[in-house]
Amino acid sequence: MRIIPNKGVCDPHVHIFNGKAYMFSTHDRGPHEPIFTMDDWRIFSSDDLLNWKLEYTLYPEDTFLGKNAECYATDAAERNGKYYFYYSRAQSCTGVAVSETGPAGPYRDPLGKPLLPVGLADTPSYDPTVFIDDDEGKTPYIMWGYAIYGKKYYVARLNEDMISLAEEPRPVDTGDAPFSDACWITKHGGKYYLNSHCSDYAVADSIYGPYTYRGKFCEECSTDHGTFFTYHNQTYFTYGVPENWGTGDETHA
Image (cartoon, rainbow, N blue to C red; front, side, top):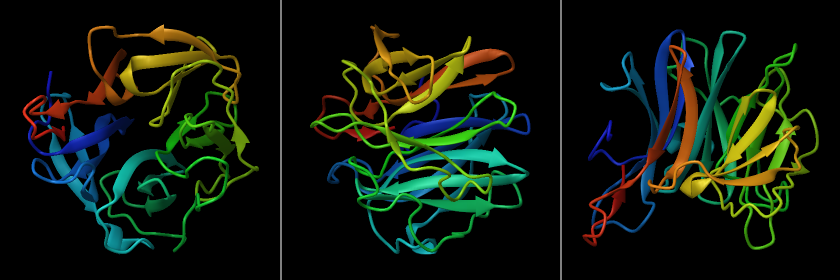
């Protein structure tokens, strides 16, 4: 079902913080605009996954990026009572903003520069996903990039501060999985599950891989940048679909 229609909500990443669902998303202008024309990032919240409230808008001019219309995909994480909002500009770089008052913000740019700069690895530094492992140290990782045109996703541990890398980025072996960008990591039964667009997924024993492609988990839906989350002991999958599909006025929602 559509939960936030006609508002240009794209690339939804949902996290449960303090018992409430928070959706970190991009914001497409809508019909009659060039594809992926995005001026800001937004955070929505919900207590029931049906009714969503706009909590905060992060504008690129409030970060090192400055005003632009290339506000690409985001993700978020919590650590030591602080909240971290990871955002990318087109297929170029990824930054991070921090909130000390809660997941709804406000957020500030603590670095004044990219966390993942242009040229950091042999893949574009965009479309981040942040994963907190279930080991004793709750090790945090960030993965990004695309796995096409001879490239691979890259992954690196984050430091405890969540705004710097604890190791050199490492390429992720995804085997023959037909991935593009929009990577997402989840874990179940001690296995790491990596998915991309169109519900393609692969499984590994280590977050670094190698991953074995397992096919599609949803044959009947066309999914864009989908992510999993668990709320009240139920696992959900949220994803973007084009609004006005087939009319010539497509926009994501």
